[in-house]
Image 1 (cartoon, one colour):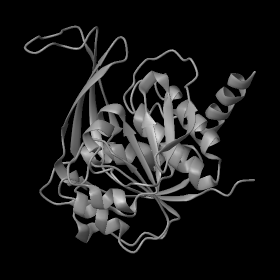
Image 2 (cartoon, helix red, strand yellow):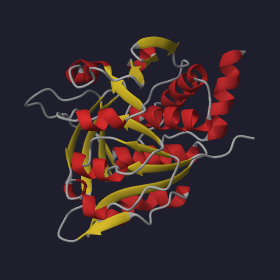
Image 3 (cartoon, rainbow, N blue to C red):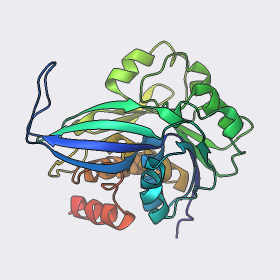
Length: 288
């Protein structure tokens, strides 16, 4: 039986305010008859919870504000068993909030008020003792680099949202996860990178490169898409967990595409993150 990998996630925590409408509003347009709900989110929290549900032992290093939103933002993580001992509460800062509009076809628009995520500083970081790190760019880059300082294990970086001047982060990465638009934007900073690079292609799946050469491709299984929010985070968590477990690059990419697809079949980001059993069932069905 595969030993569960230990994973430290350096990232953001948000409370997602979600409105479902028939279509996404154009500039200046008001779309009525929407449905509203709030749900825990943030790329750090999303990946932490997704990885925990997939069998990893996860510790999240992040920050929330000293406000009523913090408890709700952390609720799903607590329920899943994610280690929250390294989550800082920052005085006079608000917990991060994301406003998400989801259309009937699953497409979304997202606006974020970073709050405590932007005030998450190197001083809040504790040493990483896990075997792998997963991070992204919803926290300050100096904080991310502080978390990586002295760490010699596996480092995965999800490059969203686009952030310039991150070459130092890329130099330390063993795995970079990037979508097509981000890849074009980061091209100069990726020059000379020789590790693993996963290029995500939405509904078309993903490609995995090593030292610039294509080594694996995978397509997601057919599913009924409800909401694409958080699918990329679930993919990043799954690929990191699979590689940390020692799965082959091809198996890991296929596993991650399956997880990403399953994450689109329910509303929300954390609420849609699949369990290991759900992933295994779909992988088995896909092979028949």
